[in-house]
Image (cartoon, rainbow, N blue to C red; front, side, top):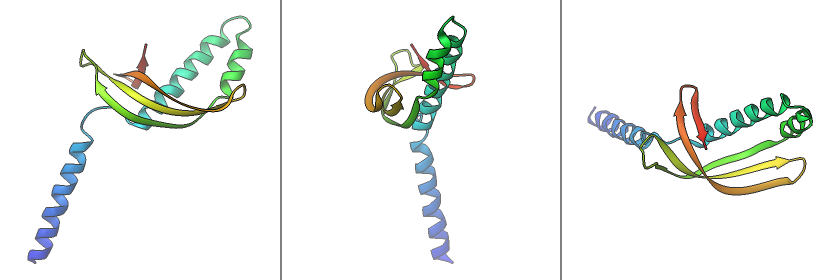
Length: 117
């Protein structure tokens, strides 16, 4: 009986610590990926509405986000968002596979995380 209580107590502490590690509020890799996809969809929509933009939109539709990895996120100076160092790998019809690292300013909006410019 003592062993079971000890196990449950230890498990409870581990769960609390694991959840505490998630409470930084910073966007996850999947949050950033979703923000990138939403931004691309918006850009494609805007391109389609401009004369001759259908070709640009068609090319953008062929861009595939292969992976997104958040390397580091820190609260911004105003405390309203995060400055995140993100590694992305994308495949494009015009340049093939490309992997790069860049800084993105992420802000949580009503529909989730967005990339602020």
